[in-house]
Image (cartoon, rainbow, N blue to C red; front, top):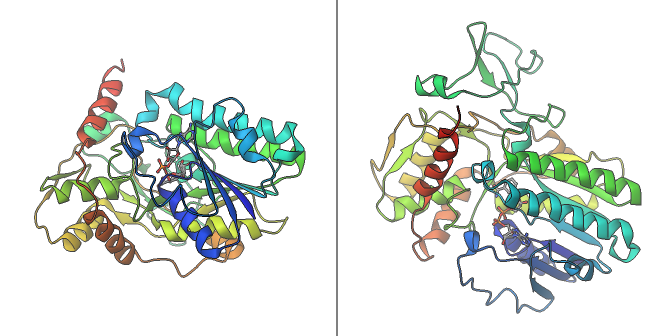
Length: 381
Ligand SMILES: NC(=O)c1ccc[n+]([C@@H]2O[C@H](COP(=O)([O-])OP(=O)(O)OC[C@H]3O[C@@H](n4cnc5c(N)ncnc54)[C@H](O)[C@@H]3O)[C@@H](O)[C@H]2O)c1
């Protein structure tokens, strides 16, 4: 197969390229601008760009004509290139919409205008962030699966400052339930808005020219190869980096906030299975582990693996705009993509840390990222 991967030198993209090379028989084109925020100023392309079967194009997907060339004759496009920091998207708005929305617009326009640039499958890496807070039910409901669902709008700074991190309705606490694809989208960041816009754009354009499209909504992806440098995204890699250099982790809120951590190899399996979806498959599929891990639990796992003790404290600080919980219902993923069993977090985290320990130490810039976000929210009247 002839396969184009935008953003193919990124964390998930590189893992996908390895899988494709292991499968054999593919001609792979990667287009990636090698964003310095993710890769530093001198990314090491050795062992990647020179592999037989891989054509590497260092370019911004928005460069006029570049996608047209790269898309000629492709069977599958994995559209992964994106700016990915939720918090950063709140102030670097043009940058996020330029790549995520305008880049997608250019790709779709090439596809629609030129039959030579029309793949059989367009597979988009979307994000759980499109759900916002995700789905909750009242804690007093016995049958949580069938209970009325609530979609909280988010927490305000007054509540968070007072330590009220959880949601309640009429004085009854709300508890998170797995978010299904039919739950409403409610983006709470410009990043999330850009990912939802990508989905809608692709869905509309692909339908007009008969290209199969699926948006895979990834939860928090982690694993070897994740940028240890980018302070704007990737809680596991940021914490690993801090612990490695003897630093202290500030656990925000009360540490009970939770995420659905899905191992990168499982995500790649989902990307590969997506090309075999039948015509009647849904166009949106969650990709997660389907379980919740609190931030305190995550830190405990990292400390156990790294052999560090007491290098974290629950600070009560918070990041404006952060969601409290979200995890995926993975029924569609299991039914349609046939995935399972998935990598347990203990196993995946162990592989991630072993890999990280072999990498050069990176400066911890997470406080810079938090400060930037704080300054933005500080300006609110
Ligand atoms: N990692 C996660 O937890 C996660 C979760 C949900 C969704 N996603 C989505 O998965 C995709 C891949 O994420 P990742 O974690 O591999 O991120 P990443 O930052 O490691 O990779 C993205 C790649 O895209 C490249 N890129 C950015 N802008 C570009 C442009 N204008 N032109 C060409 N290349 C450009 C970057 O250089 C980078 O190599 C993204 O679309 C992201 O929104 C990731």
